[in-house]
Structure formats: structure tokens, C-alpha cells
Length: 295
Ligand code: ATP
Image (cartoon, rainbow, N blue to C red; front, side, top):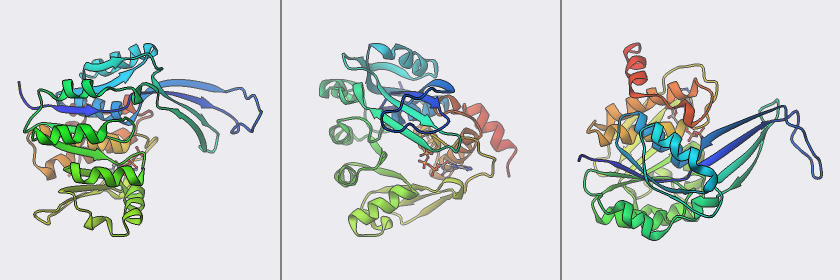
């Protein structure tokens, strides 16, 4: 029944509080505004890829408070059969933002750390050559899942975010594509003591915000450029997840690397012009319309 994207990924509830200053120790602070949204790098990438037209199976976990997160994912077209409901609370982020845009974030991994080995095995049972597996650093079992998927011939993509040097280095031998932003690329090369371009992974993508992205294929030596489109951004949170979700969705649907990169750049350009993260991911129709207006 065709190729698919599997995503072992985080599901977070983002609680956003608008405050007139960041709280001091012992202070009780009233919030001027409050907004709840679905976030987590995993959920963001799943929604981006599903709206781009791919068949996406999300592998993850929520608590009893996360039923609406699952609904939000399935509304976007994501298969949620492999999202467990566990006793731990859903992963969440409490985010305070002051008028200057400075923030203070408390992150609780919650159910994202309660995904079981058996669950991952079961979800990946039907996967094989032509399929893609997405991984990030906000769940457990990324190494195990990568090994399992690769043995079945699945192409494994790993976003080294939030950055953790020892975890990223451990993942390098079991992945096909490493995805990093500019800062993560620098952190990783500092940890390895070598330029990021020399890292031994088959494929490397570095995103550089408004400066665009590059894809380096180690075997052919080819460097594919993905210039960013010029837009007026209002909220760039989730741009990287949008980009990766769209690249992989396009590859999964049989597009070549250059086409996939162009579509992903367009999708991310649209995403940054919208407020929000997962709620700002564009549909493939939006990307078609955007590209039709650009040379
Ligand atoms: P974030 O952490 O904000 O979710 P990131 O740091 O992982 O994002 P970026 O490198 O900032 O990812 O952006 C990913 C892609 O999104 C870029 O390669 C580019 O295509 C697009 N993009 C990001 N910012 C802009 C912008 N200001 N204008 C146009 N495109 C952008």
C-alpha cells in the first residue's frame, strides 16, 4: 500500500504566557495572555509531512491529557495508531514571553520518555525499502529505532535537536541523513574537532534560516543548494521542522533532491509568515500556489 514515513517523535503541549517581565525567584506573576498549542519537534514534522501529501505514521506517546493532540494529528492526516496513551502526563512546555520577545521555558518530557521498545518494534514491523524514518532528540529509543529501521532498508533521517553532542555522535553510524541548523552544525563540529562537512554520514543537510540550506551527498560529492525565498517572517518557530517534513515528504513521493529542496524552502517560507508552529504548516496546494508566483 505504497511507501510511508514513520516518525518516532515528541508530542508536546505548548503553554504560552505573555508577561510584562520574566518572573524573579519567589515572584507570583499575572499573565496578560495565554495560548495553548500543539508542539514538539516530532508532531511538527509529522504534520508538515502529512500536509505535504505523504502517508505518515507517528510513533509516540501522550498522557490522559493528550487526547486532543492525537486528534489534531489525525485531522492533519497523520496515522495515530502507534501513539500510546500512558500514565505519565503529555510532554509539555511552559513558555513565558516578555514584550522584547525574551523567553523562559520549562520543558517536561513526560510521555515522550515513556515510549516502549515493543511499541517501536510493532510500528516498524511493516516498514522496508523506500520508506523513511524521522527521528529527533525529544524521545527515547532513537538509536534502537534507527538500527531496526536500517536493517529493514529504511532511509533514516535524524534531526540533532535539541542539540546534545554525545547523543548526536552516537547516532551518526546508524543514520542516512543528518539534519542540523547552523548553530547545531557548529556545536557538532566543535564536539568532533572537525569541520561539519567531513562528518561521515551518507547525506547532510544544513539549514541557515533566511540564508537557505545545503544538502551534501557524500558518495557523489554533490552539493545541492536550496536558496531561501524572500518573505517577511512573523514567527520562525518550527521552520526547521517544516523544512525537514517537506523534504522527506517529497522524497517519499519519489521527487528528486533538488525538487524536494525547492518545495521544502517554499513550505518553510510560507510557515514563517504565519503565527504558530504546527498550526502554521502549509498544505501542498499552498506550496504549489506559492511556487507558481516565484521564478
Ligand atoms: P527553528 O529552530 O526556528 O524551528 P531551525 O533553526 O531549525 O528553525 P532554520 O535554519 O532557521 O531552521 O530554517 C529552516 C529553513 O526554513 C531554512 O532553510 C529556510 O528554507 C526556511 N526559513 C527560515 N527562516 C526563513 C526566513 N526568514 N525567510 C525565508 N525562509 C526561511
